[in-house]
Amino acid sequence: MILYNVTVNVDDNINNEWVQWMKKIHIPEVMATGMFVEYKMFKVLTRQPDETGVTYSIQYFAKTMADYENYKTNFGPALQLKTMQKYGDALMAFRTVLEQL
Image (cartoon, rainbow, N blue to C red; front, side, top):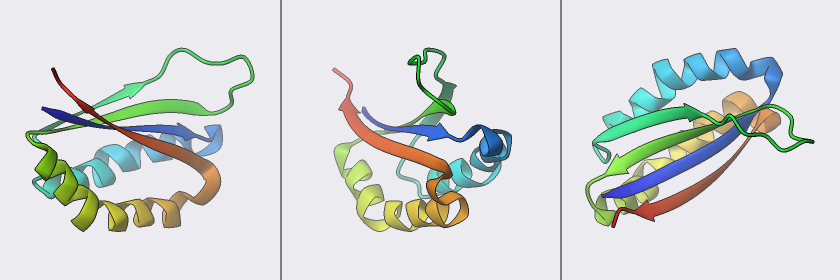
């Protein structure tokens, strides 16, 4: 199993709207690619003293690395662009890929 983890820090002033957009629009679009079999969304509870905004971890589970690579090549760029066009610098994301042992 491959875990594609997207960690996102969201400005406080768009937090509620962004969470709803993720649940109703973005995550369903990612799942509609057929490259992932499950997802989970978490709010990060630990914070650094100088941290602002709210941080989330969105975890997408793929059966194989080939499925993830297919997503990354054929679907990911357009979906990431759509997010950046909507929210710009009001959020910051980084991505990691993990393999279940």
